[in-house]
Length: 332
Image (cartoon, rainbow, N blue to C red; front, side, top):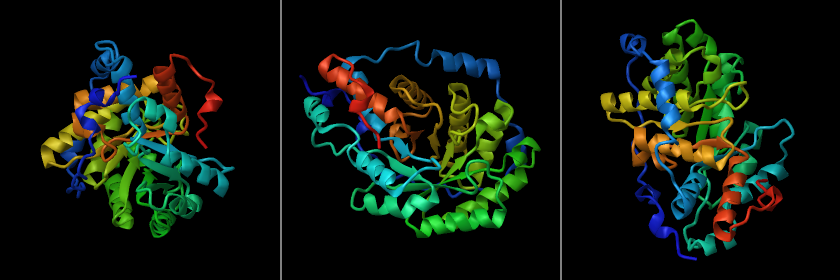
C-alpha cells in the first residue's frame, strides 16, 4: 500500500507552542456587543460537511491528525488506578502498530494530546505517562456542576497542579452567565488562572446550560479576557453537549479575540463527539474558520473516550477494506 505521508495536511507537522494568552481588562461594552445570528450560524454549520469531500488516503491522514488532538478521558465514579494505567498505555500507542506500518507511518510517534482524569487519579496518570511527553489534564472546580464553595474550587486546582497536572479543565458558575453578571464570571476565572500557575487553563462553558448562542459568545469572550488558554464546550455530562452551531459561535469569538489582542486561544469540543466523521467535521470547522494553526494539539482538542476506538476502526478499514469488530480496538 502506498504511504499516506504525502497526503497529510501541512498542519500535521508539529507546531511551536504559541504564546499563552495573558488575558486583558474586562471590557463590558465589548461583551455586551456580542450578537449572534442563530439562523446564519445554523446554515453555515450545516454546510461544513456538504461542500467538500475528504476520501481515502486524505481521510486517513486527517483521522491520524485527529488522534493527536484527543484528550483521552475517563471520568467515572468507578475509575480505578488499573483502569487509568490501561488508558495511559493506550494514550502512548493509540493506533495499532500494524496499522501504522501499513500506512507508512511507523516512526511518527503518534500519541494522543492528553489524558484527562479526576484529581484522585492525577498521580497515577502522571506516573503511567512518565517520559511520554503526554500531559495530564485534571477536571476541577466542582466538576461537572461547579456548585462547590469557591475557596474549595481554588484549592482543588492547586492540589491537582502539585500532583503533576499540566492542564486544568475548570467549569464556570453558570449562574453568572444566566444573570448577566459578567464581572463575577471574569473575577472567578482570573482566580482560577492564578491558581493554575504554569498549568494551562481550559474553561468549560457548559454551553447546553447557557440558554442561547448570545450567552455562549459573551461567556467565551469573558473567559478569554480572564486569561483562558482554551475554551471548551461542555463537561460531557449535560443533556446537550458539543454541537457545530455552538462551536462555530465560540471559534468566531476566538477569531475576534485574536484580531483584538494577537493571542491565540484554543478550542475543545467535548461530549457527544464519538464518531470519526464527527471529528472530521470539527477539523473542517477549525481549518476554515481559524486556519491550520488550530489543527494542532496546542490549540485544538477533542474531549472524548469512545472517539479513538471508532477512528482506529476506520483506519483498519482503510488498510484492509473491511470493518472490524469494536473489541479489536479497546480504549482502556
